[in-house]
Length: 379
Image 1 (spheres, rainbow, N blue to C red):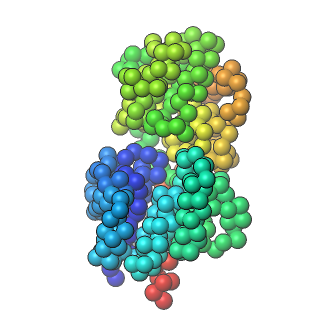
Image 2 (tube, rainbow, N blue to C red; image 1 turned 120 degrees about the vertical axis):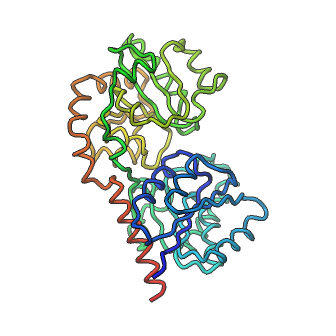
């Protein structure tokens, strides 16, 4: 029996929650059972392309322009994919319509967030409505990273639709199991040994709410003189960008380290005393899972995905974004205390392994979905 051929659709394979989760999942698939490729709608190479190639797949740049539909149909027909698995929110509608036209038997819309990040203008609402109709007509399966994402993007009564299924975003805890010398990492960063270190991981995008993060940290500094903030993510280290301007406006230049994109997130997490995540919206925030498996307490916005994680893993607290900076600061400082952090770290891996957020659970769910649907369509 030949492998099931699966084409995933992303904008670009740069480090982001869904993209990183896919690389971990593909690396765990049984050899010879699936062939997994990625179509990058930006038409540009991504930092994670090599991970897909190392697992035997191909990243196919296919720019979303006037000639896209013809080139995409040719790709689907030439490679004879069994599954098209689209991760581009409402834009999955046109992708799956083309897949249906090309005769692809299994067409999956995968929802990774609670918002597409665009303002709801009349034109945008019309576009979403049309694309939702295409998903309704063309998707054989609709999956979401959490119940909150499914309700927000699809519909509140999603459980009545047999195509709908929640498959939680997951991660490989083994990446976070290596011991870390906290004092060594702090010396590398130039952070004093006894300082409180707050960490934020997220690319410079509007939903990550960096202006509010800096404002909250200013309140932390007023209450805790020896506090530091470490920023990790693409664009956070732009010397003349809005994050740098916000840091300067609050007079925090000597206490905020903007590191940009990093490949040593597990080391940085285990050096931190708490993770701050005042996001405007998220699906199921992978960085919260990474903090949990590292034994690092989290203070995040009151979002559905955060609550879903907190219901299954310890050390995650949330506050409304309407709460004042002083309330966020007090909660963050309380979470960061050594006794809380050490208690979490001692049981972090054991608490994480049996949950739905383990990569093995995601692998099993995807294998069952792809294989079952393909077999059913050929019966």
